[in-house]
Length: 156
Image (cartoon, rainbow, N blue to C red; front, top):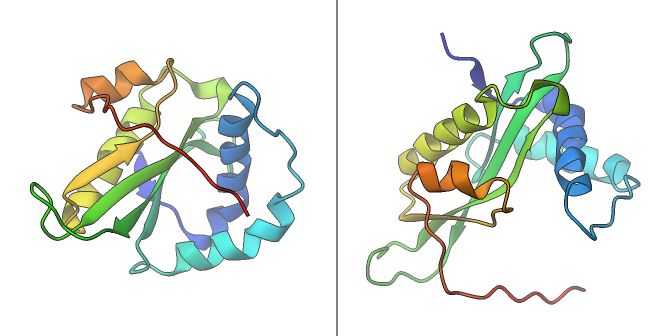
């Protein structure tokens, strides 16, 4: 039996905790956690909608009941099709985090593998993610390659 399972609404607080672990590890990131309370209802709602184009896969913490050990979350986006992806469905991985106490046990890889299967089932033609230098070897071993496309952002 797999350690990985799809996250449910009751996991929402733990998803936010692990997302914060990921954010806190990024140099220069805003590490404030004030947003958790406001985000909680949205995360619960997204987890309750299995057909909403969002999925999170988790591993329960092996030593702490009610706590998650690892998280991978992604969403399906639509863009007008093109060669190689005529239906325009793109998977985007935006949260990968492992509790510091249980790192190096293969939990993030197992969750990523489950997310990739889900993306395939959703008819995704490509999967995108942003990789830290520390995580890049994991993704490369799964077949991800760096692209020349620079990311730009506008905030409101």
